[in-house]
Length: 95
Image (cartoon, rainbow, N blue to C red; front, side, top):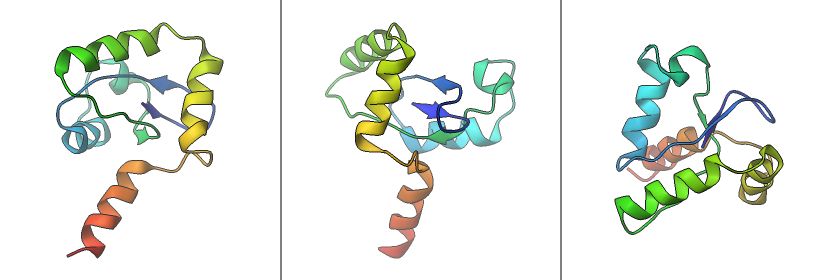
């Protein structure tokens, strides 16, 4: 899930390459939802065992009330930290 700010616009999607997809959100301008709204901050993600499972979960979350999505994010990321940036920082510090 990506967002523009805490309690702001949230985008839910599925991908098989999270780092690449967030890079695209941040750098590729398009006519899609993420092109219109700057929801480029990765605030929550889940890992699944299959593409089908990921799509099923994506659809489930998309149908949730906003409060449920906020609770899900804040359950693991209470400060709405940018998880993409944290993953890049941890990669560079481990080299």
